[in-house]
Length: 161
Image 1 (cartoon, rainbow, N blue to C red):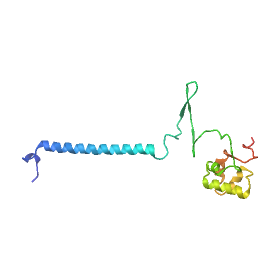
Image 2 (tube, rainbow, N blue to C red):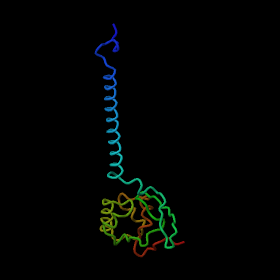
Image 3 (tube, one colour):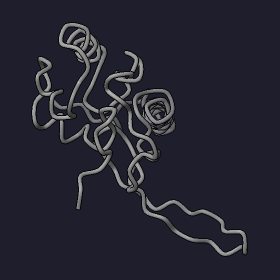
Image 4 (cartoon, rainbow, N blue to C red):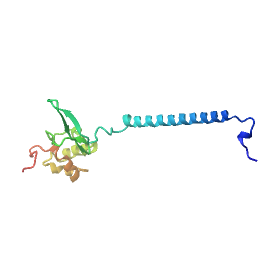
């Protein structure tokens, strides 16, 4: 024997629709809370964690000129962030550089900076930029990365043309 609600004398259509309505309200409430949680997580990840996607995205920057006209300049993205295409104004002398100055060079951290200072102390001043490859942990790749930023006193700062 199957139950048919319309045959039940205690069944009221209004009760069923109210139960459905209450269920729908609860469902929409749960969906709303889930959406708020997702939005909160997205905002948190955008503003409070890790590198900002929009800061170094390699997008054009708009700068205002003195005449009031806007110009767009493209920045170049490198492994250590953004950098201009021109070489640094003054190169760092390997024979006088401090640990902090060496540590700031691309591809050099505190350990390699300490190794450079130790090599300089044990072997005397560097005679050429290429001699830095004698330092443990520094090879051709690192040298090529460093070449625009370093020099040795008495050595020409740029190769002869």
